[in-house]
Amino acid sequence: MNFLQTKTIINAPLMAIRNGPLKAISFCSIGLLMLSSTSFAVQTLPASGVIASGSGSISQSGTAMSITQNTAAMAIDWDSFSIGAGNQVTFIQPSSTSAAINRVTGGQASSILGRLNANGRVFLVNPSGIIFGSGARINVGSLVASTLNVNQQGLDYVFEGASTAGITNAGVITATTGGTLGLIAARIENTGTLMAPQGNVALGAGSRVRLSLGGLVSLDVEQGAVDALIEQGGAIRADGGLVYLGAKAVGDITQTVINHTGVTQAQTLATGQDGEIYLMGDMNHGQINVAGLLDASAPNGGDGGFIETSAAHVNITEETRVTTLAAQGQTGEWLIDPQDYTIAASGGDITGSQLSSNLGGSNITIQSISGGTDNGTAGDINVNDTVTWSANKLTLNAQNNININANLNGSGTASLALEYVKVPQVEERPLTMLITQLICLLDQTSVPKKGLLVQSLTTQ
Image 1 (cartoon, rainbow, N blue to C red):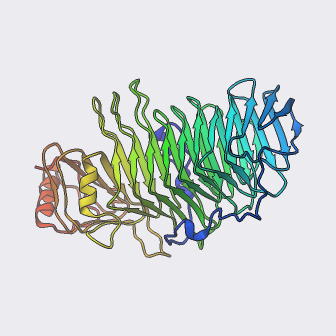
Image 2: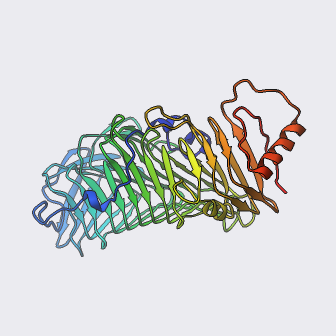
């Protein structure tokens, strides 16, 4: 599924970017970047830089390095690229769209503990890994950090390689208004802050990732990586813009996991530019574990934004808060898109109380896809716990059955829609009969039969 700044396109074929067996794993347990003191020498500034293409110059004065770029594109090969605490590297570029690609070839991970400044686009490519420490302060037009080799194809940058090294950020990385922050590797962890006002924050876990910076920014994970993983436990803010976290695994026997425990915010601006948040896991065997805060609200004007959490399995914890509320406009939508989905007091994907709570902050659509014969799923939605709400719309959209085994209690301005994607041999009946039967089913907590056509209605 391509991530674009339009939600009509984003819900297209990027659903195919995910595969892998399901198993929740702890990020720290796999040691993403548990680099020992012998894994890289402490570097105060980048060393042995050679301009491989384009035109520019490199100068150093004490703890500061300046890199002046004279052409729209420039590539530099470095033996090492690290910035010590208290040190600074500044790129002086012709414009905000000028690109400086920095390739690290010496086999040492990059440790960014100081300051990195740029008015244009800076690419840092190091297959040995990249660490932004807690003292890192990055202020750039745009920044893309990757452990995969990069090749430019027109306006696209294709990152590809077999590196299993990861990227971790504990610092503060800020792009200018409309800029892009990209972290691309097999494993990515953010415990710091990523900010791109009216821009894009994109984290892509895979072995081949395409990033387009021409026109609408897009990121597509084209090939997976073994045990692809994204940990978002920090803060991401892209008000009036887009946040995209996507992971894809290799084949049918590996896994992808996205763990969200932090704060991800893409609020609508007072000028009306809405925000979008996407957590996109593997649709065959991937898992998304959602906690923390997802915020695409509109507190200062305009309509609420859009949030999507899609994977084979989407687990929503009791600590999760999701909001697309609008103070002056229309509430936005949260789309949950798994294979099967079960609302249950225990043992399910979300509890009835948690779904009830989040319906106070957003319209919610639960949309199951076709199940998989290898994992026993059928594309069903199962309501096994009571859901009670008084505002906003709950939509259950199933590829197969919607099994209602508990009360759905709506009041006030609450509304409910049951939708079947696959409807074989539907018996035609008047709409009034369908609504009457639906209310009866809800009152009796019965199970609707497959193929029943149900229209949207407001419960009383």
